[in-house]
Length: 196
Ligand code: GLN
Image 1 (spheres, rainbow, N blue to C red):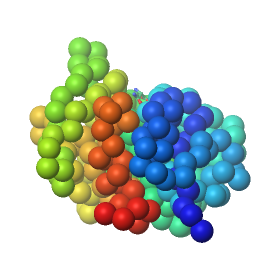
Image 2: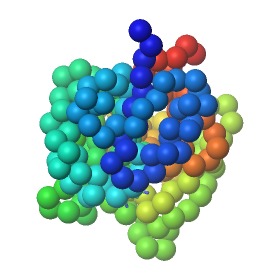
Image 3: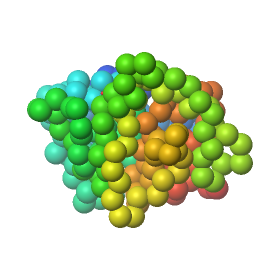
Image 4: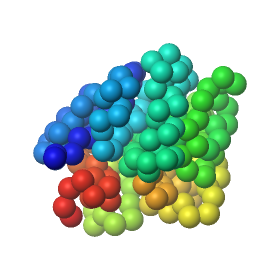
C-alpha cells in the first residue's frame, strides 16, 4: 500500500509544502479531519499563527488524536515555524490558553527574534547537506532550551534553528518557501517514506 504524507491545513502556509511534497512524488493530502489524520504516515505542521492553529486543532477535535499519533505511534512529523512552536515542550511568550504537543524536549519563544529582526533571510549550513540552504525566517520563534537527545542540525548566531529528536524534526524557518526540496526530501528519507 502506498504511503501518504499529510500537511495540516487548518491555517497558514500549507500550500507550498504540498507543492514540494508532490514534486518529490509522494502521495500528499491536506489534513483537516480525524479521518484524514488517521490515514497519514507522516505529517507536516506548517507555519502560520500557532495560537490560531492551537485553537483550530481543539475546535476540529484533532488535538488529542494528534498527541496520541505522535506520542503513542511515533508518527514522523516536521514542524516549521508555528509548527515548531506547536511541537515544543514549552512555549515562551505564548498565549496562556495555547496548547503545545510536547513532541520533543525543547522550549520555543514565539517571535523570539524581536521586532527589528522579525523577518530575515540567511544561508544556513545544515548538517548533512553539501551546499547551504537559504533560510527564510518570518516572525520566527527562537529555540531557548533543548533537552537530552535533541540533535541540532543548523544554527544562526549560535542558536539552534533546526533540530531533530527521534521522529520529530523542527525548523524555525520556512523551508517550503526557498524553492529547494532538500529538507523535505531528507525528512521523508529519515521517516523511511522514500529511498535515500
Ligand atoms: N509568530 C508566529 C507564531 O507565533 C509564527 C510565524 C510563522 O509561522 N511564520 O505562531
